Length: 155
Picture 1 (tube, rainbow, N blue to C red):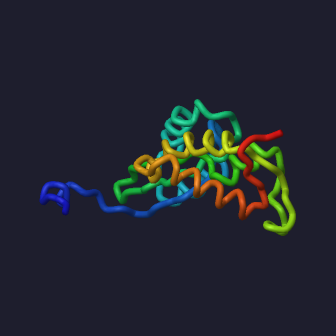
Picture 2: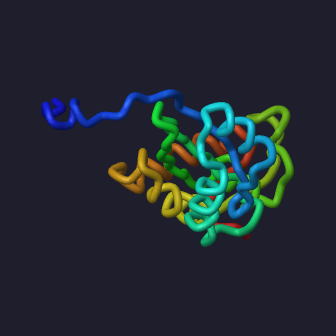
């Protein structure tokens, strides 16, 4: 339960904006510009902060961003690591998943690949308290749905 002080100091939220922006590539052009400009947010401040937070990632890595815009034209944002499907495609070296998962195998990955992806995803805010084993099981399920076969070791 929130304390009285927290309730009184809360800023009214104007909107929650979800975008996918390439790492280190936030520019005032679409899709960032129109989405933030609509709420009169400081585009350059967002671009600088986003670039600073995502500099450890390779350029053009798609990053999910959730921006909370407040009515006083200020904002806060959280950056999540790329999606599991993006990591699986990169690890497997494929452009797209199987058209018939369960029937046609698009590629094969080892458990080591799954473990590495899980270690990265564990740093996300919604996964930080999940056991690594649970994250791995979830990634294996996603891989199966994409037509990627997971084996103990690659031959």
